[in-house]
Image (cartoon, rainbow, N blue to C red; front, top):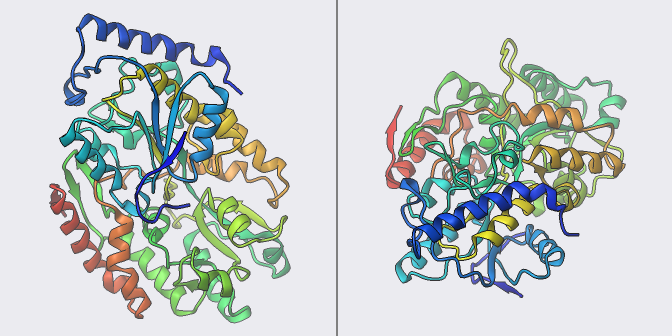
Length: 455
C-alpha cells in the first residue's frame, strides 16, 4: 500500500542472505532482551538505555520523500512477505520540521509513529534522540561488521554520546564540475586553488561575457563555499552548545571571492532550480562547484547538458593550505523508531535500503554513504557514457575531505541563509557586508532552539 502524508509542498531481487547474517543475529539479541524484560517499555529515553516495546510484528510503516519512494518500492518487491505501508512526505526538505512536528504529536497521543523514516536533513538526531523517537542502532540492532562499511565520518551526524541513532543514506561532498570541451577550446586550465578560480572568473568576464563559474543564489550556497573554506558558522561543541563566528578570515576570504565574481557577473545570483537560471544560464556554465549529485540531477536532468561535456575535478583549495577541505550539500539519513513493534523487519529494511547494490548502487541518485555500494554507483556513472572522463577519483577523494568543523545543529543553515543573506544579495548587497547579520541570525536561531552560543 502506498499513501501520501498531508505535508504541503512535497518534493521531488531479494538481497543475499549472507550479507545480513550479522543483522539477523543482532535483532535476535534485541528481541531476546525484550523477552527477558517482560513486555518492554515505551521507547522513550533511548539515551539512557533502550527498552523496546513489545514485539507484536505487523505492518511495517515507512516514510520517504518522493526521491526515495523507489527504494521502498524495490524493497517491497524483493520482500513480498513483508506487509508495508509506504507513506510519502516532504522529507523535511529545506528544514521544514514536518517530522519533528508529527513526532511531537505522536508522543502526546502515544500512537502513530512510523517504523522507519527517511529525512533529507542530516541533523535529525539533534532533536529525535531527546524526543525518544529514534532507536540506538549500534547496540545490537545492526551488526558492527555492517556499520564498518560506511565511509569515514559519514555517520558522524548520527552519533550522540557514542551511540548511533541513524544511518547516512548518501554523501553530498563537493567537487568542481566543469565543461571539459569549453575549457580545452578556450585554452583554460582547471583551477587547483581558489585564487586561480577567482582569476579565471575575472578572465572569463572579459573574454567570454555571459559565461559562469558558479552561482551564489541557492539556499545551500554556504554549504558549498563557506563550509569548504572552513568558516566556523556553526561549530557544535556539545549537544546543546555552538560556537558561531562568521567574520573570521576563513569566512571573509570566501565571501570576498564570491562578491568579486558576482560583481563581474561570472557568479549568478539565481538558484540552479529556478526558471530564470534554466532559461538564461543553464547553457552558459563553464565551471560550477557543487555536490556529487549535481552531475546527474542538475547537469544531466535539469540543464539537459549533452553527454561528453561535463567533467569533475577536485574542489579548489586556498594556496598554502595543506589540509584539503570540501563542503557538503545534503545526503539524508534513515531513522528507526524506538516505538517500533516490528524491529526485525524495520532493521532489515533499514540495512537493505542503505547498503544494497540493488538500490544504492543502481538506482540512488546520490553518492552512497556505504562504501561498497559507492563503488557500484561510481561504476554505473562511468559506464553511462555521460561524463567527460572518469569522475571516480575526484568524488572518492572528496568523500574523505568534508570539513568536520561544520556542525549539524537543530537549526537549519539553509533556512537561515535564505531569510538573511539571499534577499540582500538580490537587492545588491555584498556578502561580506552581511556576514554580521548572518552571525546574528544563526545566534538567534540557535538560542531559540535552546543552544548556548559562544563566539
